[in-house]
Image (cartoon, rainbow, N blue to C red; front, top):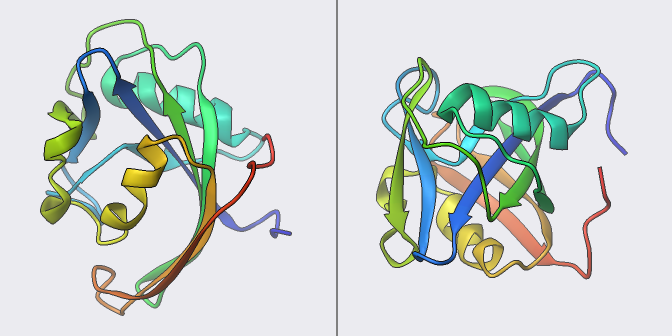
Length: 163
């Protein structure tokens, strides 16, 4: 159970299976400046995580997502920020060409060449299973620097509760 006032994030990960690639965004500012992630931001008050993920894809990369799948939910904690639940969505089709926004610069990467060294430390641990469409839940605890991963647990589950 989560507190209604708790911080919530949504991340849309767009995959082009035909070309074997994934869309990531290089953040221009904020806590993930110079790091790649999926299309990631806060869920607004009164907004569901799936609707937020679709909105974020449009705002950050200029693409329209008509169908996505909620495949993972993770809890993040650190002394560097407020704890947050992050909802991970997979989209395998979109409309429009990704374009740069004020928040990030989108870029396609081969699934075999994802730049994990330029991504948050948790991503290398869960992206492979996520890209294989395996539902998961878990937590990640980061150090005071907000970058160093101290502990984590990831569990594959039969299904993720629809949000």
